[in-house]
Length: 369
Image (tube, rainbow, N blue to C red; front, side, top):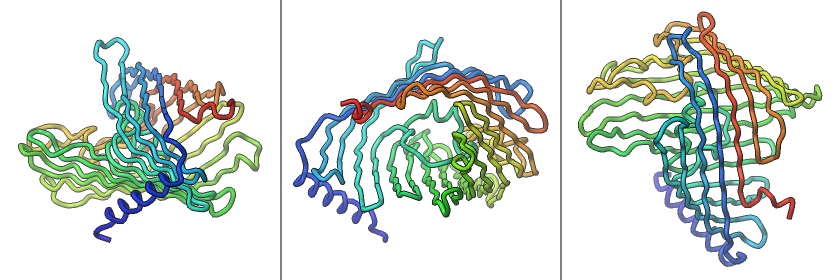
């Protein structure tokens, strides 16, 4: 399997050739995503995170050329566009390029999608604890550079991808992450799942040192909404296990971990989600520094910083309680108003959130045509 990429390339070329032979004429395709977020964070009671307000909007339009087979089982698209972010009250505008190839293919009961290039992070559809990726990361770092494969079946879903975050340079660290998530239903109401990533935080020409950060989260979940007539009623029990090694400063692996219980209920578009974690601090090197004296911080960890507790390996408690209202506006519009409270040794602070997400693509209005 050392030459797996050659087989993958051959499969793509063959599929493209077959699709081209059986295809309709190339057609125009588009996608556009808009996000508005007000997120006021009052964390004065907490030593683990700073108070701040996220207030801004982003838009990510892309256009491209698509080719679909006549039998509808395969399609290819080349897309190009931009991702534009504006923090309200700031004169700066952050803009980045989106440039990717997307291949959709149906194999009997399996729908596969491969996306390669620079593409929106929202294409990740796996279930990840907030210990993996925080809300602020998703807003400010909204694109991936690499490859994403997804597989969807009637009773299961799987994805695996690679995000290349930094190219080795004079003062730029080499950084990349391999991640994956999947679950399968054993019954109509019970499923098993697993999410994981391996993050490699290497050095640059001027700064030596490598840190490995691996996080694995197996879980079991019960979905009881159908039995009770509620929009959603679920609970899951999982375990977060991390393996971390600061090769230069420590030289051996540490293994912080703990159990996580998630309860969610929703009806009449009003919901409550409670996420309870008990275990060791998951970010032991958060306050450590590299050879140049630069703090690792959010460059090494991407999850909610409340999981770091006091930055040690001792057992710790963290609870995240969210109460929200998400009324239905349209199937391509999501509005959410929420209050989120955080608890560690005691009350650690809370958030007030208003968010609007709009997702438009060339299939959005297909039912109306």
